[in-house]
Length: 475
Image 1 (cartoon, one colour):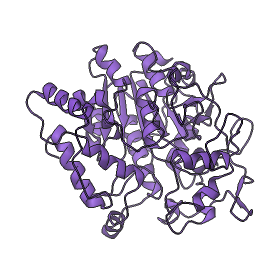
Image 2 (spheres, one colour):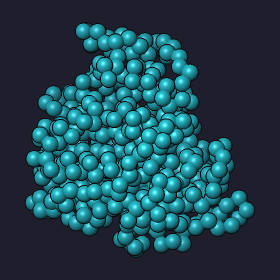
Image 3 (cartoon, helix red, strand yellow):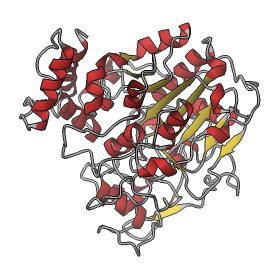
Image 4 (cartoon, one colour):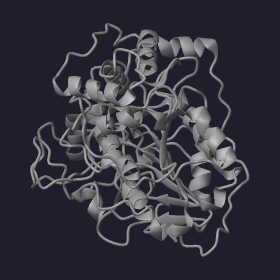
């Protein structure tokens, strides 16, 4: 029962499809919609490019696909429908355009087979072990066939507010959030967002007055160990190369580093005093161009007011979703009992139901299945392994230097844009007035602080740190 859960913890990683990460978790069957090896796309010459795996776990293999695939709304339309135009209501997604879209990207060096690559459980043992020990959902879709920001907005607000891409920026993003429901209900220790370098969730204007609920990831480890986690914890990975490499699993970042993050979170929760009252959800914001063979179904738009050019009336590509709790029967493959699949709005639906947080955030969230059904054990009997270990990978100084010299990906560029729209002076003692003045400036379209570091990772990181310090103090 959901009432047995006092702490819901969500880790949202970056840009991997279900087939890419978990397609070989179990043999393909009526009960598990995975890969059997026959799945393919055609290349520009009409030749078949099948799904494939290389069994190595070296850095080169664990960064496939490299270079980064396309992930704009137009790219995803091509991936899903095999067409370069806006789909009509008569068009049916057939998942035929991944290879052609990958080969059409402006970056050099694309190999057709890269986009059809998948990992085996031996290569991603952490997420695979947790999926087998607890539950995997093989029909969890990104909320929209769109980029990172729209899909992350869905998990926080139940809508993307009509924005199908990360850019152009539309500050201030004023959608009400699930976190504000905790504030409205005056629930003590209701929520925290834990982050590594920069929280994308700071895009949301209604969270800026509650900047004190944004905490560095080190504090998550402390809170888990001491039993002081809030009701709802949302964890953001490291997006940039600074002293360490990114652990977000965004192609072509090293997947093993994301595995290490998952293991670290699980081990903290498993060793903490609140483990038997915790629900841990691991998912990914979107597929990031990586191949998946299951067509996304139609969806309820988040609002009755139509948006253009996309009305958010279909789901995005399947993404990995693993649900962990001692109340879950080992080996569970979770699916919705109705026609509506799980998507990112299932998370606020679950949080809202558990903590009695009022009406749905959107029409999409109103129909989303929550995760009550996965908690099928009457007692917390499935404690899981005491610890879990990821494969070893330690970045050398040369690895970090090489990563810092790479061009910023689209997500990183947009996080620089976020930093440009944060306060340009340190917070005053009257924090409420300080934030209100800043939000009024955003509403009045005050120009953001200019920066010339959008293609330089070290300078971008330094700029972001400076801007965050205006909210959070000296970093």
